[in-house]
Image 1 (cartoon, helix red, strand yellow):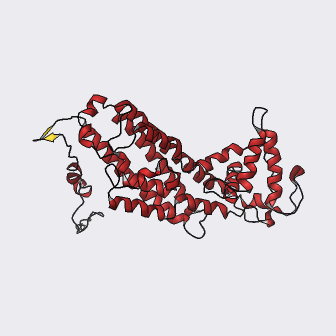
Image 2 (cartoon, helix red, strand yellow):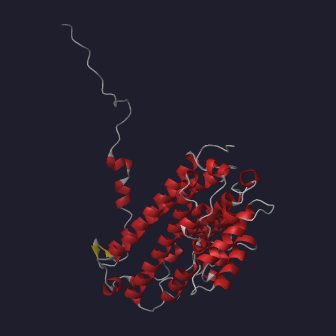
Image 3 (cartoon, rainbow, N blue to C red):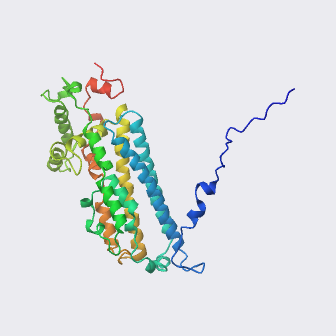
Length: 368
């Protein structure tokens, strides 16, 4: 037999092979922990290393969250995102990833809380002027999500460069981020252009007593308002809730969401089992969950501060516990979206959709 030529490894190339440590720049990464209590190679405050590593890890994950958010904004910034195709699937996938990252960040607090108050006091005095408040990336995340400056707790804290504030370059980065079109705005625009109430879908609709008056969406919403009224118990403040229903969905909207956008959000939540609504519902649900995880993140840090320093002033000069408590209560981004849940009714009582709309929502086109 003739000798067969040796087979070359399919992964072999002329390039220098990758190496774990070099690819991840591990040597550089491990040189970035420089505790202030380190003197002549000896660490004076043992837990300062833990404190630095935890916060550096936060910043790495913040970088990934910003990476995901920017990609979501690029998709939703298109003139028309494909609601039942790859575009929306990518957005939902990335938002769900952000949710999981926030869960991980919240669990990191458990590790940080293995540090006792006395352990923290070993190096706290050397941190004067520095504070987690100064995390530029965290403020970028808030701005990209849609938290406007005027809606923050104590917005005056955010616009100074004295001790405890931001360096001028960092303040510019945050200010620039606030000028960009936020994810909230893009979601609002996406919701507002939903074509659920095009007259072609609703022509002649009179489902179980639905009013046959002219107009497309109004017939449905007149019917739905009656059903919502009937769903309220005697313990509910009916007049107040119905007044807010009218205000929210037909007059002023709520927060940065227009009435049309909130009607679309409610409609998606009500008919989320329709195939075409599964991704839009997952998107809305992910945004609400991101807000919840952010609130948990703030609350865990509030509890940790109470445990570590009580009611003392924060190292950055803020009121410490009082500032964090205010941020927990106020710095929500999608509370108006979550508030739509107030106006849901039982699935069994939902009006039956027109045949044409039902077909369209089941990927069968706008059938006759």
